[in-house]
Image (cartoon, rainbow, N blue to C red; front, side, top):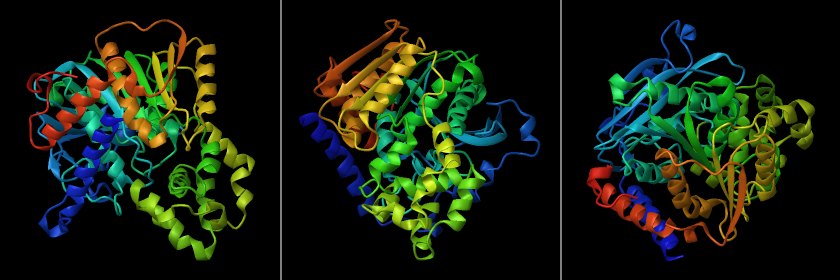
Length: 455
């Protein structure tokens, strides 16, 4: 509990410091929003490029910064625009941000998927991780900012971290097939970026994501055998899994997390014209202005805007979300249609209020029945939010074993934990993560050889 409190204190103090500083005016210099940045527009004829092919690259325009304020001292940070595919397999393009620590091990790459959970390209991590980036409303990108501290933990291992904008150029939140493709193509692009980033084209690769990031990571794992069979991915860590979208709507309505619903509907409307028609015809006129705030706000701002609202009260016909064509879309973008061929770690809070624990059990059973190698760890005391913290150390330990080539035990296993922090080595990982996070925020060069003891 002490380590959890210390970690929360780090996040709180960083956020407090960041928001105590007056936000910079546009005139003082601020990264260009993706919707206005020509870098994000693919060149003519890009459709003919192979999935994962790099279309354009640059160094990140503004330094990577924690909570938009504290510069992180990296050896390099790059953006790659690359060809990918949308939910229907049609060509699209998106960006991944490649973070390189000092004294990097270019043979090890982790693809980290943030829980962006918003329907605007201006919430994408390629933008949100930069110094002075706009937050898309009060505390809009606070989750992405906090997750940078987990990326830093990976960077302190010497690993290169690639962070894809898996929602694509339209902010298609919950278009999860697109998200899986974007993750896999982001890995392809990163491995092909040797002359830009220094990454070895044959580097060992892992994937990691929590909550919305676990959806993108999980879909990437499920789609990899058919979409990117050449990728040799050593394993994927999925935390706070959200396997079934339709159930989540009922779970979070009239709760603190209600803001995920309008963001998700708007995100799906970017991919599906039939969902866009719901926005045009089914939102009550007196509710439309408030509902559409999620069109350009980021996750944290949506949480504040819609907390404890009844989203069904926004609809002319509350049953519209139960129509067959809507449920088919939700099911298509839910996990479990395919079985991963790579090792999987799932860590999940028993008291998760966003997505029921038993639905993750069902995914575990589905994967195991299909012959996957899966470890499933249940935290009895965490909830969805705190599980990010209590589960991170064991995820890091598991990913480190995959990076070092330690084989997983074949088959499936379940473990029930009072808390993930009591796992062997977890407290040490947590304590070092906190220390390094504080030092890195103060300007210490990020990298394994410069960090004293590594995690």
